[in-house]
Image (cartoon, rainbow, N blue to C red; front, side, top):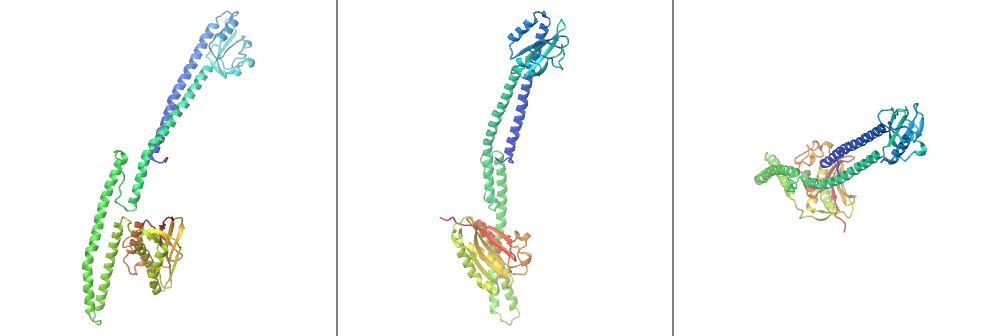
Length: 455
């Protein structure tokens, strides 16, 4: 049970309120009952001693013994004292110092006033004293056993009543709390794909019409609007890239034809050549944009097969080794054997090719580029490209995956800022985890890939 959850806090607050309210209610009943019994005991003692103090002194001891035997109580005792307070007879052997003669009853411990040999198994007594006609003092003691017994019954009932109320209440609350917690977990699960960019997902609605359903409906409406707006923006960008590609291709063909027909000595030949290169760069950007759009539109994994990461890295190495050699770079390959993952082999090759191409582009002559694959934990492999180039600053490591982003260190190099965006789209399709880290010199960029379970 999550005590930080709203439902759990409400349950705990309700339980504490109920316990406090029940304690106050039953406590009031307890104190009123005990007070009633004590008042009744005091009244009975006052009536009894008022009657006994007018009895003939010669008959008084006999009547007192009869009183003790016939009184319906757990224990009663009496004591006679002379005018100076000295004990004459009875089980009560001394008067409590604070007890006033002809005053109100007083509650004392039994062993402070009762003779040891007559002490019963009682703890407290209510004592009252009155002066007789012959100036002697009569003390009557009445046990508080009935009051204590009733007090124990009420405390016992209070304890068990709260226990039998609170425990089932908490258990019932825990059971009732499971339903909203299950709903919240479903909502959390539904939001994970949305957080990763899948705007087609929607929050589940149970049909009960409760607060969670209303909140889910509002969020779903917001997602509908976001998906529509994103689709419109994406559609405009894709249409621009697609529609301009045809006239640009025709323009390039015409420029190329003019270039071929011109003499090498023509002063405009170099200008035409630069124009052809610029058009090629624009077409490359459009192709990259359409490629990213195509990858983002892919939801199914129909092209996924078991891929040996070592073989894929070997193919990438063989393709880019000549380029690294031309750039006077040391290009190394290290791959653990037996790393098999479910992936689209062509897309995986394309992603790794972009990473290696970037590393070669930004590493100065005499530097080193390393392509590696190793198992980092059970069921997970790390494919990494490390270089000795300028590296990527910490504050730019998230931005480099965005379209058209070019860091400060890449302003002087050719490119259109879409290579890593393609890598990010491919990684997202495969659920690969991308990372950028610093090396001793340069940067380390790679992907954590889940391996296929061994049969």
